[in-house]
Length: 311
Image (tube, rainbow, N blue to C red; front, side):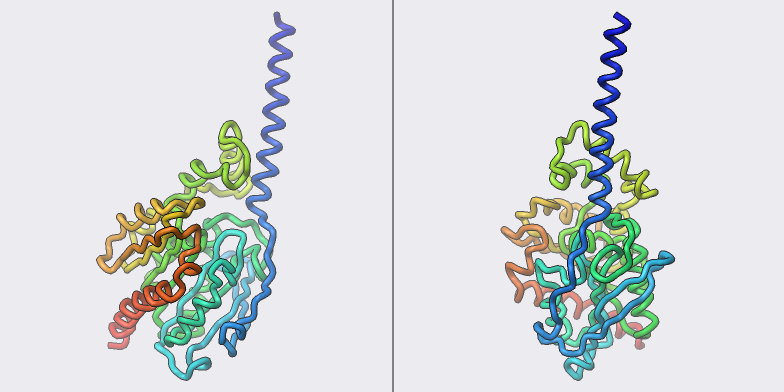
């Protein structure tokens, strides 16, 4: 009897070790997505004066690369505002699903300066662990610092996509330098999102792998996904937020934006649910309407902010 129990225990231990090793490998891949090259040219979107920029993250040792587009240089007209773009998980500044350069060109033509940059471990920025919005906050803060110091007096807005939209909410919700946020396809809570949707990312059964991966991830990151809480930042935000979400989003369901919008306290906040659009595909489906809505929102909020600052 003792021998049988010992064999069962040994077998269970082997199974646990195998599951643990698989989970560790998957966790490593999730936090080290393969980089995608910068292979688009701003000039192909009518942007002829792209300035290559590099600036530090708030986290020591991380250098971030990007493009800065001056509306004054491109069009001869500037509103004195800058919009900072934040890309999604495993993407780069180009956010090819849109593509982001197309949206940036619309904003520049309306007089907005635009900063597009690569988060850590993406594009041409420094190698580092990808943390799906946790340490990326330090990168976005570095971008805000860069614009605030190089363009003093500019009113600042953020626009983010997927992971970048969650990061924009986390930073913009509490940073008083940010006047407006556009959040395209954000998640409500990283821990809650992973618990529900991790099998879509890993291809592994929910049981028993979810528990192993969500236990190993904090150890590997030296931080906990439970700390990535966009909903908490939205509740604190004293500024307008424009949520955009496709109703056919199977990656981050639209309910995430609906729940976040319900928490937004500023009366200028709004929600646009785009029928039939998938994850970060609203712009691709309706580029003109998307551009018009975003520009109208930014015009209303940032012009008012700048007028108040100038006075």
